[in-house]
Image (tube, rainbow, N blue to C red; front, side):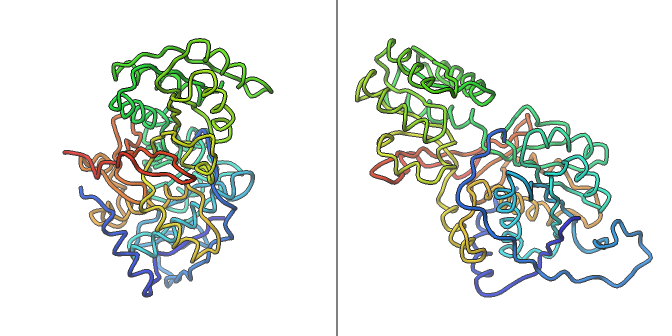
Length: 401
């Protein structure tokens, strides 16, 4: 059963945050790394039931709207990924309150029992736009169902292979993070690169992005070593990497724990001056900056400037820290509200507006959808320094027209 969340709600705090939300708007995965504990269930807002009308009703419990756009949020609300899914759902509720939009109603659908079935239910309930799903396999299941009904999908996945055919991706693509950090490193005089990359789909895509980025930046990849998750796999790959030392920088395309385990081995074999590089995965992990082995390392990610303010507001409302990926839900609502200003009630979602040249912005900074339907993001470069992260190259404020 879908859970309807209305856009109503006000108060002094909401009005103050609305000013920030408005300022964030520009004109015009699959790897999921949860951050923080699972939040409590969302605070349900009262939903006013309209008087009976002769119009057809899609669901006995969810009346058809005539004054608001019906939007379906499709995330896992049960099972192993319920924590991050619930956090995204909470974030969308918070965004509705902050923007004080009266034109959008969001109804939650659990994808864990079956994403395709959830999509059919949402469309039968009258959904005109789908936000989600989170996982790439779920996007593959939902996209054809939505396409057949003429409903656009704005997913939270970062797997570019599922983009297209009416499905758009808001997730943080590793290729963009890698390209940004390589370009920055070349600008700092680094010419020779090495890499440690895990086996698997993420590693394959990271390897391709790394090789292309270094070549495009005019650098040289002296060695790229892959490793499995079996005991000793990372250490063996690092030994092979060190055999080709020295390097100006070594990328560890893995999470913070693996990077911290490999860092002293790299430094011991390739030299203490070797710069360690990370990917967007590091920004999704709590405590990565506190790992002393990574002190001085660089990585590129979406900006955390507005996220910190959002996290404070989230904790005050829900009593727990948000998952880092929940900001995707918040920003998807900002995008929907922005387009909704020129989207007549009861009509098909104007998919072409997702191509607005100036792009959009939100908690995670500026982004726009490219020809591949994946979000191109303005990324910053951070350095891990003394137990915290410091921005050493700010993200661009937006995109040129």
